[in-house]
Image (cartoon, rainbow, N blue to C red; front, side, top):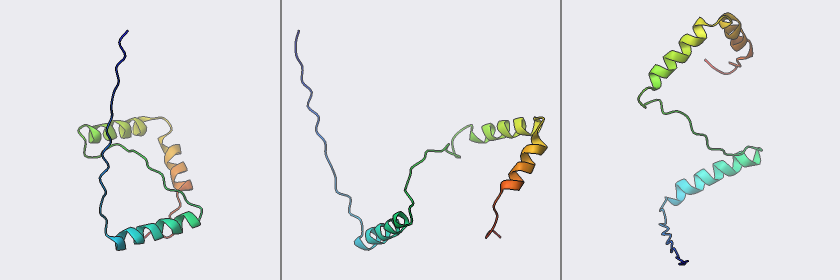
Length: 86
């Protein structure tokens, strides 16, 4: 059996960011962390992708044609917190 080796080279490029903006973002994030918040990253469907609008319509029609649409709308209204919204 022949042993093969693989060499992987990692090139890291330093991203130059303005010190002012970097410090401002860091200060903001530190403040949020001090409030007990944590940053997360989520991936959502791309609203510009092909088929997105069609899928939205499909799902909306399913809800609209469902037997419990009125109940679901009433629940949404009941739990909605609009305080501070204009």
